[in-house]
Image 1 (cartoon, one colour):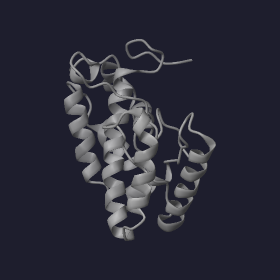
Image 2 (cartoon, helix red, strand yellow; image 1 turned 135 degrees about the vertical axis):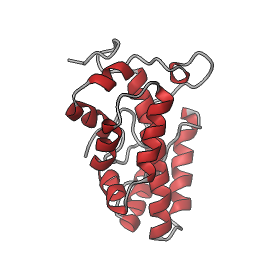
Image 3 (cartoon, one colour; image 1 turned 30 degrees about the vertical axis):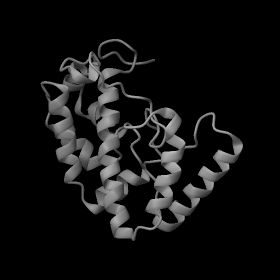
Image 4 (cartoon, one colour; image 1 turned 180 degrees about the vertical axis):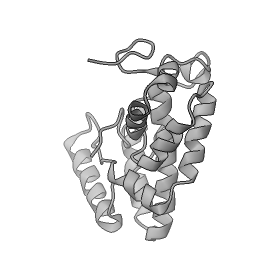
Length: 188
């Protein structure tokens, strides 16, 4: 399964207050993203959402003048995901444990994930951008418990919504923090 910058369950915090790079149109990685070869852009996008069709579509509409346009393209492509695309994207997700959580919490989380995956056949996904890190574990456990009551069709819809939110969050993070730390730089 593909790794992601921040996990589906315990993502890196994304600042959104005044002065945040996420609010401005000029992000260090956007210029590089707009000019990189299509295969490289698609690979970056697959780290945001594991649907190849979604990644090809977002990459094909470059260049994006600003982050808002890129995220709008991300959303549009996300709403056009077919059930097969959602299934593909969910297959790339992985369940994560809470970093630093006590062993009892890790055990509860592992059991909840196992129950969810047994019922629905894919990893549980949730976007936690609206919550503080200290709330993440409770939100994940509560989310799994609530969503276990869904029928499979309802849960596919909820999972697709969460995938779209995660893709948006991961993409914003990737544009603000390009590999290598510099404007559009690549890591070693």
